Length: 300
Image 1 (spheres, rainbow, N blue to C red):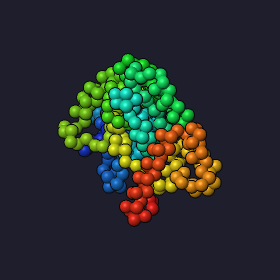
Image 2 (tube, one colour; image 1 turned 60 degrees about the vertical axis):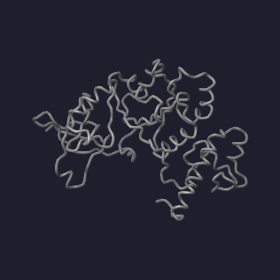
Image 3 (spheres, rainbow, N blue to C red; image 1 turned 30 degrees about the horizontal axis):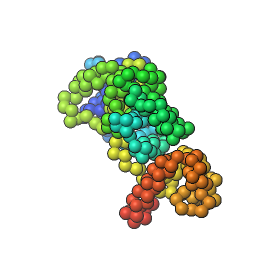
Image 4 (tube, one colour; image 1 turned 180 degrees about the vertical axis):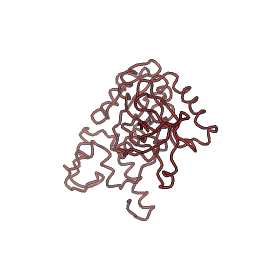
């Protein structure tokens, strides 16, 4: 029996939906009982091999090796995170952006920072943001309302599995609809065909772009809770701090109050932006407090 390849994009209680790699078609697939007996269960994003049955449905035959696995939401083979933010209506504070970026760095995934609603912004507002983040992150400026730079964003998403993150109100849903008009209506129709009741849906779903590519329809890091990072290791997740840490007088410097701290010299000189350091300091103290609450127990 011929085996085809596809990607799991959605789960129901008894079956899953798969997008075929070659045709882009979507079909329901069942999982053989031997998988359940062995405790094997695909997750959204898994690349699978499947065979076609006589009733037009598919049957999962094997799950291919996962290249990456994101725990929240649980999804595999993510290739990039799209962090969508706005500098007006609403103005996302830098400290919030920094928490998102730490989560992305922790997940070891590339980040594309998408500034939406640029039609509302003055040039100096974009310039100020770029001066803080532009050296270390790929920044893409768009307006879903005015359809500015949308084709360039499609090129970034095409052929990849992505996750979209961002605060409420920054225009994630509008951006998705502009990228792929009619997407929400089409997904709604498919959802009704997958299971009778919406209560059977699972944790995450991948939406399919007509131009190629898949994207998780959840923000992914909605609660912005920091992962279990050792406080002294937080510096690894701020690239501009991490790359300079080796220049400090002490190899274990955490850039708080140690003498001979080169990072703090760079902050005073304006080479590392003060708002980034303030975010680092706030998160470091948060992690230290969490550690104290755990009785000093180290993370595994």
